[in-house]
Structures are given as structure tokens and as C-alpha cells.
Picture 1 (cartoon, rainbow, N blue to C red):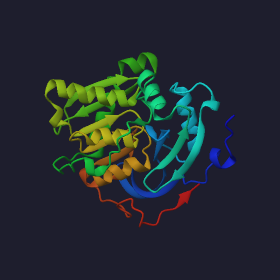
Picture 2 (cartoon, rainbow, N blue to C red):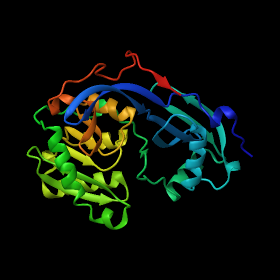
Picture 3 (spheres, rainbow, N blue to C red):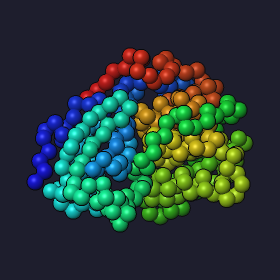
Picture 4 (cartoon, rainbow, N blue to C red):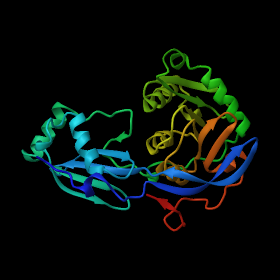
Length: 292
């Protein structure tokens, strides 16, 4: 039977960092330190075959790998898997597992069972970084007041949420702040994909400037937003460290906790007519305080 050591189940890895952001309150913006959750890529492999790349909170990564294999029905008992190694590099972590049957057995499992792309934090095995996306222009500006007005407008469209309380929404706006797509779905990724798909079918894909989300904004949500010409991504809840980093690197404005006349501004505040605080860019060279 596979036994996880204490080192495998608990990790001293950094899970939060402190970053100086702009807080917008009562029609004024001021610099403030904010605790940001770290989001870290984890590659899971079996018999040398990568089966998943997850964006996750650092820590308990071996347990995550075992749990993923069980819940995706690749195995049914812990005894079917053994841990080869677990390593953490600056760019990603990796958990390598082994099972009987070699690579052919893994390919058979993936073909028969599949590893479904869930609406949580799963990405496919291809690594996509900021260099894979074009840097957007600065031809779009708006004010915090306009964002809060659009927040109220989009919330009023939540018919499914009003009746069930179970959905996220994604609203897309053009440079004139006209609504060009709107979707609700139980999955936040699905809502974003549906709205972007609507603009593809209607011919408005190139007109997307603002993406408004009722959810938190993870790296995956910014990555999807970076596949189109969106210059501003705004969410009603928190953002993650890698979401901020990707937004910074691709010249996108990232907003979080947009609600009740407030918001946090994490990157490229110039589109809102506001000055960016120091430190401006998240980078290894910048002094940041880590919290375990």
C-alpha cells in the first residue's frame, strides 16, 4: 500500500505573497499592500507520460496527483500507483508516478477513460506562456465609475443565478462599452468560452475590449482572455499571482473584487486614468514578503 510521508502531505512552499496594488474606494485610489494567493503549475506524469498540467496552490502536490488519478478514474486503488519523484522548479512542480504496464498502459487508460478538462483549474499538457500571446494596444480607456455601472448592468442579466444561485457569468464589451456577448454557466471557464464563442459566431470577436467575470480570476482565465483582444479583465472576486504576472506581461489591465463601488487594480492602471504604484511589475528581483 502506498504511504505518503509527512514531507509529501505538507509543504513549506510559499502560498501567499505581498504585492503593492491600487485600492479604489469612495471614488479615490490609493496604494496598499495586498495578500495574493500563489498559483503554481503542476505537471503530473505516469510512466513518463504527462497526463495533466494543473494550476494549483503550492503544497500537498503528491496528494493532489494521487487524488486526480482517482477522481479521473485512471486508477481505482492507491496500490496501483507508486511515487517516483516529486520536484519543484522555479517554473513548475512535477509529480512523477509509476504503474504496471509501461507507457502503453497509460496511453490505453487515456484513450479509454480520457482526462476531461474540468471547469476548475485544469489545463492541457501544452505549456503556454506570455510569449504565446500578442501584446494588446492601449486604444481603450474607461473609468472606475463606468466599470461599476457595467457591473450592475451585467448582474441584472443573471436569470439563471437568480433562480438557482448556481452559475457564473461572463459579459463581453466593445470599445464603446456596448454589450456584445453574455453567458451564464455552472463553470466560470465555460461561461467565458461561451461568450467568446458567441462573438466568433456573430462576427464581433475582434471587438472585445472588456471581459467582466462574476468569479475569481486565475491564470487560466487571463490566458483565455489573452487569446482575444481584451485589454481589461475584471472579476468580482480575488485574483492569483500568476494571473497578475500574465496580465502584466501581455499589457492587460487586471481588476479584482469589483463590487459595491470598490475594486482592486493589479496591473496597468493607466487604462483607468490612474498611476501605478511601486513595485509596478511582479518579478523575482523585487523584494516581496512571503507567508507560509
